Image (cartoon, rainbow, N blue to C red; front, top):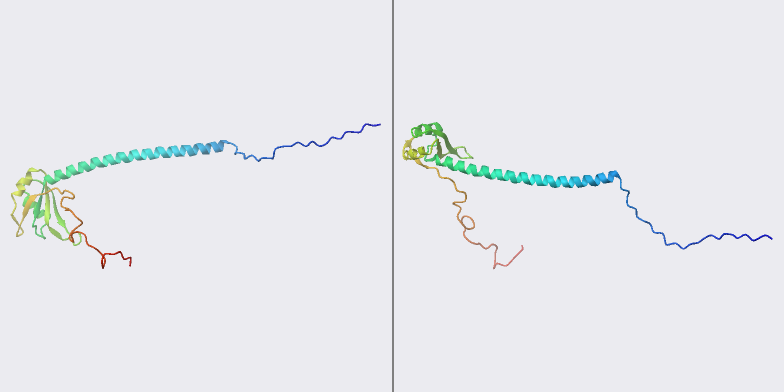
Length: 188
């Protein structure tokens, strides 16, 4: 008699339902380099923006200094200059220079022109080397050049917005209603 052989029954074990794990990509040197490069890029971008802001502040400060020096220089030039009115339209800068040469050394003679027609406007500015010459030049007021009496006065420094006035522009005055009728809104 032979013993019945025991057959091994397949083992069945109850296992948990299979869950797929999402795997993160493996960390490699290349991915670390990319992350480092992105961080470095943002840091370098921040530093470049900060540097640029500092440069802009410095440029603004330099511009303010230059503007201040220019206004001081302009007022200095205006203190050494005269306005000459009623200048003949055919007069040349050389003739004006000869006329005012007895007063002092002349740096510049400027006859203003109409920008559209290029014709003289009838007045000029003369800049002297020294401010004391302005007082002497005023003594030449009402002298004759080319048959016209010259009007000589010290050049005034233009003050922006000085003569602008108030209100809503020139003329018209006040509020003007628009449209027809009794003031109702009509979109057409």
